[in-house]
Image (cartoon, rainbow, N blue to C red; front, top):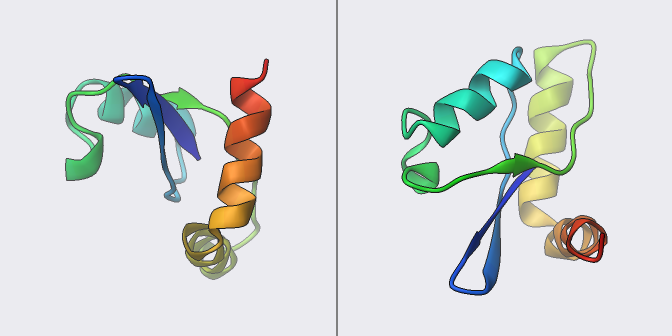
Length: 79
């Protein structure tokens, strides 16, 4: 999960990748997902999985679980 701040509002984005560092660089250079273009992102949560299907399942669940996303986001913002 990555986080950005725009006009005093925090936004999160969830995705999966084999190379987190490269993917974050793509997002920060406006070459990643359409939603992430033009914003500066910071990694706030990551988790490793043994298979792509397990990673995609976790991604799907995290995208749908706004309570969990907000709790992770709030922990990072309070730092």
